[in-house]
Length: 170
Image 1: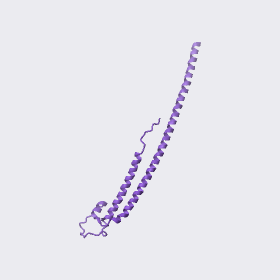
Image 2: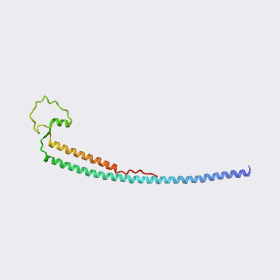
Image 3: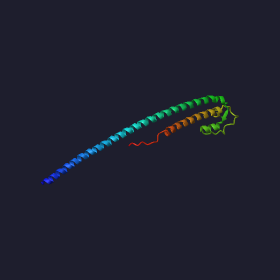
Image 4: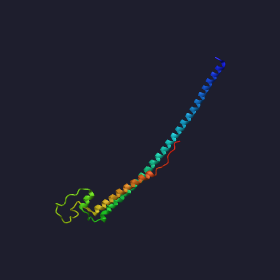
């Protein structure tokens, strides 16, 4: 083999090996930088998640405590209304049996075979509602409505109080 050709071949092989060696070093360093950046980004995202998670838990607990206080207040007010109903109502007939059956969703029975009687007293007829019964029902319905409204408002407060920003995990 010609010495020039041998030198060229040795130079080519030496250059290829040096090129491969330095290219490998360069890209290994780049890969290490990418892995480090990815690990830092993941750690930052995890820290942000934990922070927001704790904020959501604290906000939820505060709203739950507020809702519990509201429900206690509503319960107390309803009990006061129920106790006061007997003082402001007379116990007189308010709704007759047909109205009570309709409101209770019970089927009407055929009363045509029964003889007409004089107006039954309040104590004789179990199928009537007195003004006390109606007032008690209204008080209970108001309590349930206000409790439902307070719970829905708390859910709305929880959802509207949530941060809307999106996290950029760069």
